[in-house]
Amino acid sequence: MTPDRNDAKPTNIRWLVFILACGTSWLLYLHRYTWNIIEPHLKQEFHLSNTESGTIFSIFFVGYTAAQIPSGIIGDMFGVHFFLGIIIILWSLFMGGFGLGWNAFSLGSHAFGIRHSSGRGLPCFGPGD
Image 1: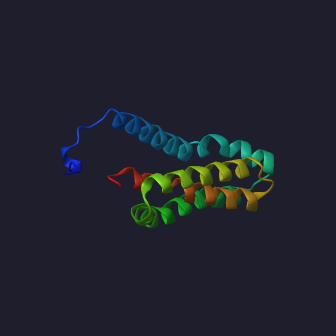
Image 2 (image 1 turned 90 degrees about the vertical axis):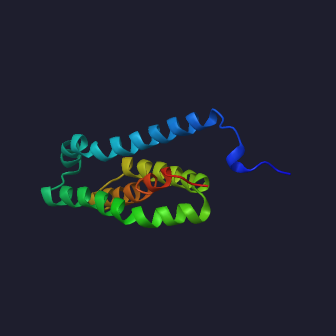
């Protein structure tokens, strides 16, 4: 007879998972608020108008909002472990692309990719598989 999942004694790995989830969540929140610090430097370096800068800032939040509900569903369907790994890879690629941006369009498209990928992480931090 195999032991039931509910009868198994909890291991200490749950604390590692908890700490990693908290750290990832902290990075996601930190990244969201750094725009206020880098915006003046981006405007100066890329000669962005207030409208262009505001559009890029808005794209961050559109991408974030568009990712929330679908990512919870996808995380449930395919498993949060696999899905979070994909999210972190995409987030890293878009962050690198944002750093290599050359104009307002490239910054905006990478900003959308950053927020769309990082916005998918938080719904997956709940009870999963």
